[in-house]
Length: 341
Image 1: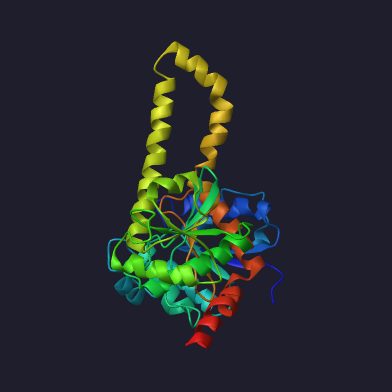
Image 2: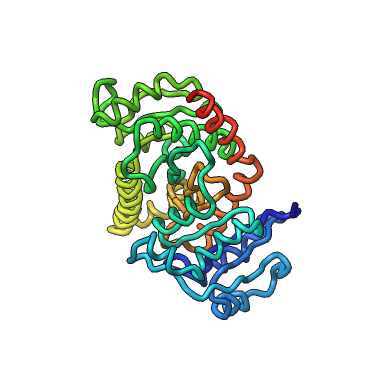
């Protein structure tokens, strides 16, 4: 086994590729001493970006050529099948061949999901593979499961989401006995559609999680729970509204401080604590979103990721690997589910 954690990064994925992706990879070498990075993409373009840097350990970065890029405007399944030589598919196959330990990409979410489930593959016994971003709250951090992978999930899947999310929060983010909440239109047990009502009953009977009941969306920013369980349709709406509201508030606050001389003076006085506060609600601080339940780690970085996001995602890869999360899922969720059948 390699003494380094080998991370394949889709260098061509996202709005700011390959420049910001390469920059984040290079800067991560000083953050993490036990990693090797494989940049997958158009070799000439990636090497041109690498040439901008000199002060890094060149032995810990490798470039693997992949001439094409998956188009986010096309069918993910069709693109993955058609473009076997794309940066995303080549990166995934490096994992399949045992040449890397995990994969990260800022490319198409749909294509990455298809690659993850068909190339890396789900752990046997895990029914669905949810996308699980960390979101900042007034109480710290929460994990949103699912935010984009499975629009129609059976109630039984919600239980595995809760189990996987709980293990992730405890082992990767250090939250003991994480509180699990089910997103609903009210806190009362009888609220919601048939899917949510059925999920509630199953979660209530699950001994492996700290289920606190239904949670309303307005309470999520207050940190009402540590693991937020929902289907991908609801989760994606929450995530997008969350991101949009945060950006709007920052814009409003900055605009208000610049409206008058008094505001500008006050702004100078609060600049440092305000910057610190706003930083806690900056999504780039927390890396990408992992697809939970795969046999290996696949991280989806935001499409507009810059070097800071890439560095955070790489840090997440290190923590995930240190705790051997797939094995914990296999033993604590998949095996138990098989024995209960």
